[in-house]
Amino acid sequence: MSNMLSADLYPALVGTPVGLESQNLVSDLIQSLPIGLNARFCRCLWLKDDDPVSCATACRSLLETIIGDVCLREQLTQNRRGVRLYVLVGMCMDSSAVPQTIVDHMLTVRNYGNTGAHAGDDYSLISTAYVEPCVLALVNILKWYMEKYL
Image 1 (cartoon, rainbow, N blue to C red):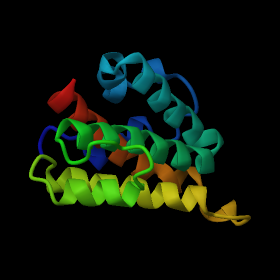
Image 2 (image 1 turned 180 degrees about the vertical axis):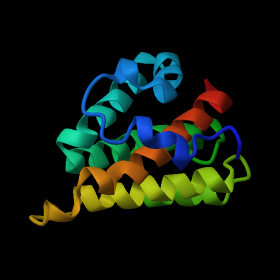
Image 3 (image 1 turned 90 degrees about the horizontal axis):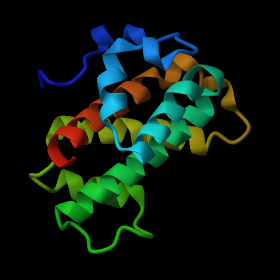
Image 4 (image 1 turned 60 degrees about the horizontal axis):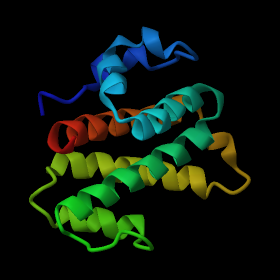
């Protein structure tokens, strides 16, 4: 979709340890997010370089919040509490309300987040470079979510 941030526009996030205000590509998104989503998204960005394992897990957690809200708004479920993320993603897959590209981004964040949450003692596989596609997918999900629902 043309309104999504593409990987070639993403370098502003890559390797930037601090200074969210200098990241022009996501500044509009950050400024337009409600305070709760904003704080959680900024946390994901900050963790990306310093603690990529926690970044992946935080991205997954934020996805769970967003996708739960989407499922409630689209009346795909009556209650999101206790519903596993893969079930919520499945509901979105089966719904015409969520474009396939966004479902693909949701699957990306879920998979990376699962790796972060279930890596056990082997965190060596999870680096800043590893989580960059996860953060990019989350940016695209948030952009779509903001345009459609907020």
